Amino acid sequence: MKVNKEFLIPFVGLKQGKHQFDIDKKFFDDFEFDEYNNVNVKVNLVLEKKSTMLELSFKHKGTVNVPCDLSNEDFDLPIKGKLVLIVKFGDEFNNDNDELLVLPHGEYQVDVAQYIYEMIILSVPTKRVHPGIKDGTLDAAILNKLEELAPKKEQVKPKKEEETKSTDPRWDGLKKLLTDNN
Image (tube, rainbow, N blue to C red):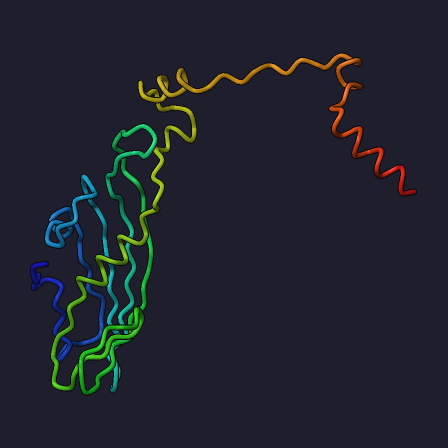
């Protein structure tokens, strides 16, 4: 992954306020992630600077263009989500916790690209179904072929009375054992 200076936030001398990032396909190319055809996501970042720590609140909303898992048709999937990250200062760098980042004393900037990347990736559902399939408006050739190849359900005919009375002789022997004990 390349370091993108746009996502390095220098917090030394930074005043409180909102910072907004526009995320596009190039952002994911930097991570060598090519599962999305196109990306149009707005990320709002509110940085609250306190005396001993920083609180970063991320919110994102937008669309990712992905292929449908059923029809393979591309569509824009709406996504949204949020993440709160606490940045504290300590002796050494530690990012083991998803909600807490420890930076060494003397550090003057924080890289938020990895957190934005993970937040967006985790907001995309694992099963992606085109909205036209759900409401029946998508007319895809693949759906017609799947329906054509689906196994046909057999029509259940009502059983005749004599068919229901005949039982397997092995079961008759077991039923006899139950009645003999009583």
